[in-house]
Image 1 (cartoon, rainbow, N blue to C red):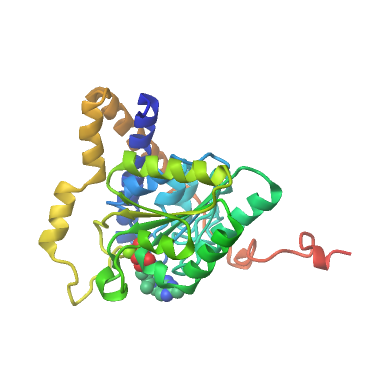
Image 2 (cartoon, helix red, strand yellow):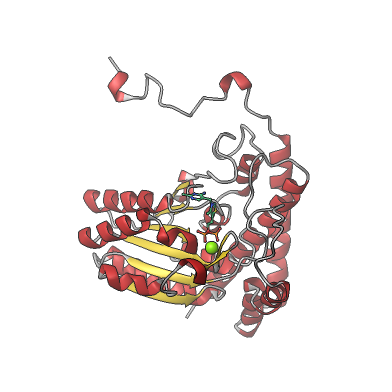
Length: 330
Ligand SMILES: Cc1ncc(C[n+]2csc(CCOP(=O)(O)OP(=O)(O)O)c2C)c(N)n1
Ligand SMILES: [Mg+2]
């Protein structure tokens, strides 16, 4: 049973992601986002269901499709949007950009543009919690394309052997850019791979935020109690192109199918219908919509108002200085 406060918070976070992604797409179209931009529109329930099962001090790592993860964990939108625009006021001082967000305030230790790159980082964070004896857990988001990387195998095997408190969370949106899962995976169930490592594997409907939340809560409880890692496969769907502005000459998804998913599998619409049937009023939903719209106006103004890093300081924060790097200190 979800409390009403939790239901409202879930909707709020999903709406924040949707609004942020729409704004990011717009900013990219206006030529204001240096580099690539990958939208999570359609995947909000998977991200929020997972993040809401975590505590603020639990760790998260993510992917190139990176905006939703810190927002799902409760990040401030101003600094995220400024980061997309490469501004000094950004969450990584404008040095990371869209694909390399990190927000330690909400436990997001890093997003990685290297497919499969966040998986060993999360495993390391889990190892840290294990060695220090805290009850923190770490959760890594990755796509279906990442599970054929060596880092996936090596990390999960290590976490299984050492019983680490890590949740491996696959946002399976059925494609890696234009490659359908059936063309790159000999065996189509990602959750089933857990058997090969002797850990629990679960498949969930990634468009159902409550189902994702429950499955992740189970995994978190298991991890905190010393029960080791879990692999969760959330079946979801990306509504936008792989990256904003991408125009592939050869179509790889049937347009009718994409439109059908948008009509029948939109996680925000599905959740809104469910909320109205489960003690949340239309008025409460509208209040949340207004709050999110206001936050986005502020974030936009904050991001546009910031300055870009000075050229002479462009490598600042990139490397440890002699003052902070122990090997160089006198
Ligand atoms: C190691 C590596 N190989 C290839 C790429 C190029 N690349 C960027 S995104 C992507 C597809 C990723 O698909 P998936 O993991 O399913 O994530 P999705 O984009 O669907 O969220 C690829 C191949 C990369 N960034 N890193
Ligand atoms: Mg994918």
